[in-house]
Image 1 (cartoon, rainbow, N blue to C red):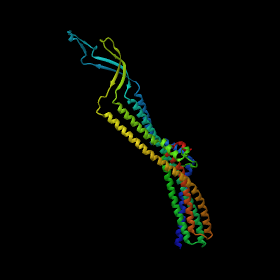
Image 2 (image 1 turned 90 degrees about the vertical axis):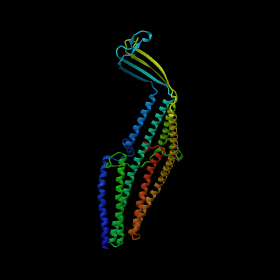
Image 3 (image 1 turned 180 degrees about the horizontal axis):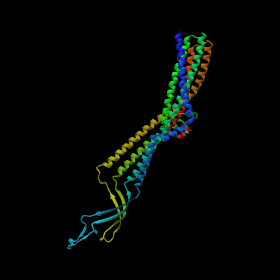
Length: 454
């Protein structure tokens, strides 16, 4: 019996000392960090992540590049002005030969062996068979596609940050529940030890209480580790060093705003109309169709107008300055079917992209329905879990009173403690699931923006 008592005392003392030592250091560090930095709101976290995310910066750069490509395509319809100058030295100077007229005379075409020529020319495409217009349409669609890709990525970044933000809150709440359970079991273990010493309860009650306390403190250590990991993930989402202090504000107010307040059919319709993934696929199909039109235009006549000025230094021509104008037509008589096959390939790619878009629309509707169901269920769970917390608290109070009065068992107390911790954990899980489900629904609809925080 003495060895059993010693084991129980060791469990109680060792767990208490270790728990106190582990808790004091992080608590002090966190207190200093929170005081120095202040708690961060979700809106602030979002803005920091958007500013630091390298993938988003790359997407914005690609969008800027596509905008420049669109401007270049539009510029193809503008007049093109060129200027050039050249100096040519002849080994044998060109000359007029009058031998055919019976005159044995050859007059040089230029004075000397060096000729200087300067020209300025302007050219304007008059008709390209629709190629230039198709190129502009394709470039505009490519620009729109990059913009939609950036928008989708931006919303994914916001949701990822929100998930990590809620993860920190969830892990902190789980640690609070674990610490509360440890403190409550420690109090119960002290009561049982006092009752054992006076002979009111058997030693096995004390040992059971001590073992339950040790288990609770192991769970507390696990919760502390989970909180550290959650903070590291949060810092990763914001592009900060993993060791950076983390303090976040609770999420008390509903998120998502008016974007998720509509009935389910309206949410599905909104998602089909505004999800950037669908718009991106539509823009990709439009770009392919436009490129197919440009390929077909290669088989049509090409008409261009040009004119300009030329200066030719010479000693024998009547003048050195010349103005000219020309109208040119080019017809692709035969290209082996290259343009026809190229346009057909692009048209098939566009059709495939449109099929992919229709399938993606069905997947998006499923996402909206799933997110809507998760939010509805989470909101219902909050009410149920809140009632369970109150019932578990009252149950623990009653069971403890009965045990102190010799009417209940130690097992009942330990079970009541476990139920109280379980109900508290369920309540925290439900209320944080509501906040995250609100943002997931906003993302499913395609309306997750910075304004979703308000």
